[in-house]
Length: 238
Length: 299
Image (cartoon, rainbow over all chains, first blue to last red; front, top):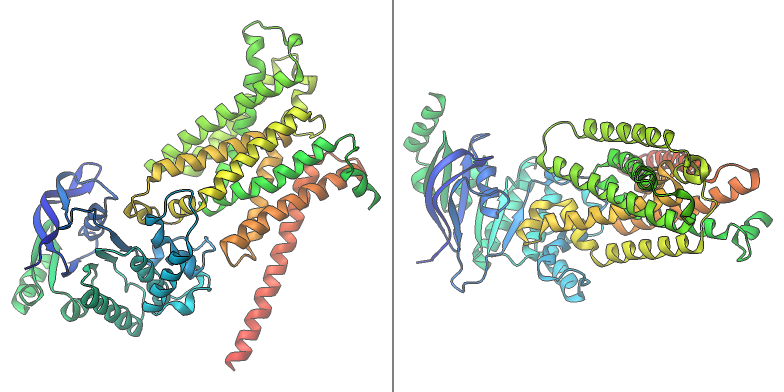
């Protein structure tokens, strides 16, 4: 049995002290693949930002624990549209940023980190985009570079915010297959925000469903049962 | 050519002005690149104006407190002006950045108001100061003529320090500017690095305003970076092109001004504008040609 790596303790999340979701208490186990589902504005991104420490909880806390007691390292994959195309970074420059957490301020990036970045780009199938300007890559290509960057951080938890938004079906399949593979091979905990039920069914083990201010949590098989889905959507329509 | 050799000669009477112009020309675009990338172009307009208001206030303050202006040396005037410029710029930049972070209201509106109020305040202060005509207006206009060895040394040291800090901490400054969320997950103190960047901006703007005036500072902060962005494929190229263009324009501007008896600062800015226009046309031609070639390849 794997131990909990992320635990929400009576957590309420939102902005400026106004809770969007209340009383969340659940644990995400180390090495699990959890999908976060919910309609637009349900609080998926807010939950992600709270986990990552980008915004503080309104009430309660997020306990982040590794058995070794060392701090958890997040490999964050934002939506590529969130990054300003004005910056003339290459794919390699963007991926290399993943190593900055290990390099002290004022120190130059050592050759070993550059080599490791190339390894991660290769693993993510993004080596071909290393010298291209990041802003000029397609949605799927950007996503691969951002996944490579997340891998460069040597993460305990891979956090992906709708990685297949604005990506075509073939690229979506390739990206998700790759994430599933590294999840299995490296036993990395994966937290995936998505709208895509078939993806969840195929790759995830657990589902966190944010719905009308409530948080439903359970195994995929149970959460995506037709009767359960019908009741959720009925509630949404109602 | 003869004029250029004369300008570059160590015996040239205005050599300090040439060196200061070139220093500002090389350094301002490197800091201005962050303003362009962070889409804070209007801050690049407002800050030099606020900085020059700081100069006007600092130079007028002794008069308000009854201290005789005649006892001041030009060196102490320059130091007082520098302090006023730095204080006003840093306070303004920190307040504007704080309001920007809160994300409420219209940023352009705030910056536009800051610009116009600062410009009006400078005129009001100087209109009530009988010493204003004794070189201070030249200082604010950026005549770039009377620059002492002390001024040159101060400018060179401070800009050297700014560029050194930029070089040392470029990866933190770029990370925090490009992807704040990523920076937070990597446990970078984003507020601290923002303040470092704003300090560098404030010091550079203050020095540039004292050396070449607000209009020219704005020109050097933004135009080289905007022109370089049209061609740069990497961040390194972007910074290098911008800095070289700024340095070259400052030297060429000085040469034009000296040869045809124009004021230096406006000559620099007009030249930068011409370079930007040429770069834009060239970029469009390159874009059209490369587009045509890629279409031909597809066929």
